[in-house]
Length: 266
Image 1 (cartoon, rainbow, N blue to C red):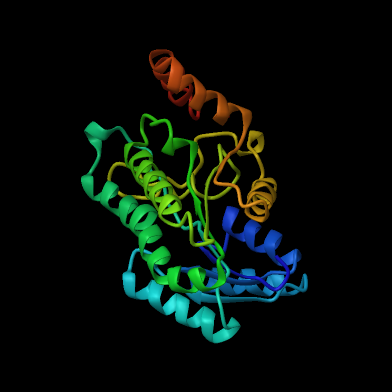
Image 2 (image 1 turned 135 degrees about the vertical axis):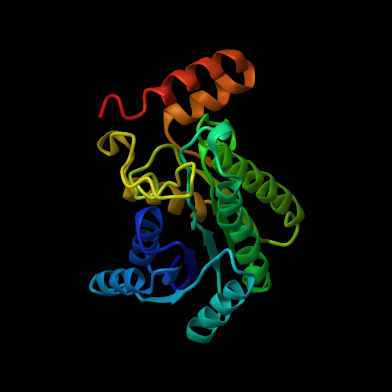
């Protein structure tokens, strides 16, 4: 990744920030995006102290024109784009029967359409560099989770798009990676939307028992360098995907039991 230009959406915290650090310390030039300019600037200052060549541009990935501007800003500063990491995303926590459908629309706008808009805007540059497009998806994109209908739907859509794109790009030299972390320490659960679209404010799970964002970033970095197609993280994640494929009824029961205990054992 020496001197490669890496554009990371949702790069000011969590997995996105860890990816900026991991790629940056391995010699890449980094552009991070997000909606909160103050948080972006704080991350830029922190990583520059580590010697990382990093810039930021405020971007709402759910707005198509913002993604076009993001690409222009990156090319104006660095001259090219080698790697796009579509990391921006939000989640939710509510039963579908209680849910305001605007919540699912918001998740689709950010998680799925954000991926489409950013990929479409970056693709000409990625084709020129024969670079990589990386979607940060989830185990929830392979196995639907109760109380996460909108999140799972957005990640299933994400996985289908990336699989189709990877096949289209087969003879172009462009690498497409679908990266699916399991539960990883980040702010995503604290910022999860409730049934009315309000922020949850606290995590329903014990964050100390999860994979760290830094470890997750190392796995994604290595998968990018090796140009892998699919990355499934955590033994639990690989097990539930296997179980869902061969024993779906049992998977239903185990997933229901695990999710229903959220918040009870913290």
